Amino acid sequence: MKKNDWLILSGALIYSGLFYQQLPGINFLLFTILLNGFALAQDLSLRKSFSWLAAAIGSLVSAAAVFYFGTGLPVFANIVSLVLLAGLTFKPQSSLFIALIQSLFSLLSSLPLLIFSIFEGNPKSLDEAEKPKQSISKILLLITVPLLIAFIFLSIYRAANPLFDQFIQKINFSIFSLGWFYFLLTGLVLMYAFFKQRRVNSLDEADQSTDNLKTLTLEQHQDTEWARILNIKNEVLTGVILFTLLNILLLFVNALDVYYLGILKELPKGITLSQYLHNGTNALIISLVLAIGIILFYFRGYLNFYEKNGWVKMLSYLWILQNLILVGSILYRNSLYIGEYGLTHKRIGVYLYIAICTAGLVTTIIKIAATKSNWFLFRKNTWVLYSTMIISCIIDWDYIITDFNIHNFEKDHTMEIDEHYLADLSHTNLSLLYRYYVVEKKILKSQHLPYNQRGNFDSSSSGFETAPYANESEMSFEIEQKYQAILSESKEVSWPSWCISKQQNLKAVEALIAAEHKP
Image (cartoon, rainbow, N blue to C red; front, top):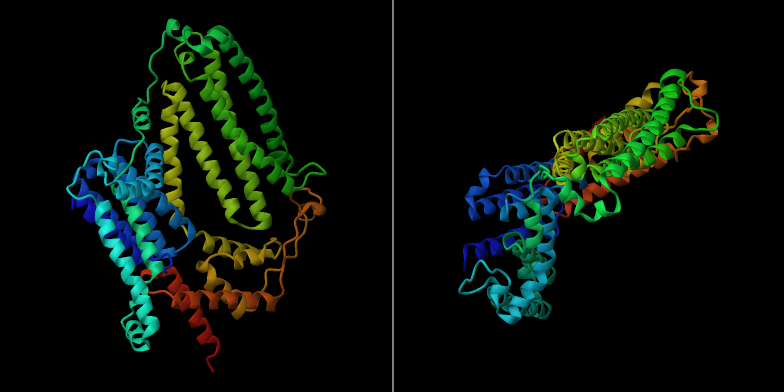
């Protein structure tokens, strides 16, 4: 077998050993280190590629976060990183988005192509670059059929002979079940997709386009379909009219925000803080995306080189600047709402989304000023999105949310908090909640007052949401149940599922229980 075939088989075996019937933990870190090592063993020159190194670092950082926190976001970030790593291992010069698309295509096509290769005996259809004497598909067929038959007879013999069944149980041979066998086949498909990539060549060719716009002449522009519909002078005129109107509209929006939030410090009667945040923020976030899209449409081609484009450029810059002011308004609205109702994942998500939109607006300015292509903007912001995800996964958001809400509630007992939401978060806030509810026997019941009674924003109390409060015994029972569930779950898995944060929280709760029962 070729080196790639050995990497696929050994990777699949290690994958099944680390992940079968296990939870996220140290297994993600070990497997990620393994895949990075395998990729370098396949092609040592990858260490000179910035994109590959960035994806490799992202995969290791996210895997370390899985090992420490064991929560969903690091797991998702690690899976995305490994998919990117597979695409960049095959073609390091790919952009991030194309590497992701190509890897997903390879993954989806691997199983049918692998089956086709087994029955057709045509390794060339799977990998034209390699023609090994004996393809991995044939090796799999030769190995899996005897293994499958052996597992069937193993089950029969265990059912027929209690002594044999007891012997198998003692040597912990039970892992090699039919379920494990299917899991191993899944690992084989995943490893096959990683090391034997299938590519869409047209995507790779389109991906190699330069970040700089190709200089266009008026004659070249006039040959385009769009120029036949609307000549360049009329296109500039529509751009000036459109960006003028949009600037005027946004000026009114921003002026009203500044007047009511910054000067009067109160909202008009009939408008609640909840309406002001939810109805307004969702629409304004969409408007930021549309703003970037409109600018990209106008500055997609010849308009960048047209000598009379000054007014369109100036109005576009002004509109981007006003959108940045709008970003500040959204951030302020979100902070007001957090101060009123506490921190949640969605409210943190608003901050992250705004950060990405801000990066998009800034890179749009660069795109216009430096005459860059739309693809340049897409490439750069894909990296922004990926970097944001990797940075986010190393932060314990569940603990921060719980600590922030409890700490700010304790100041004046006026913050509205959904206690059940906190209890439903991951294990990382377990010890904090256990101390607060079970040991100290407190509850986050608010003495909420509307803004106009606190000398702040004027808003009718009828607009405020009512938090689903529980009584002390109900929350204490819920946290106890959470502790027992996490404890039971940790006992059902072995060392590959070891997670630092989970163990720390369980030990902290055990210490609290021991201290509470101390004579």
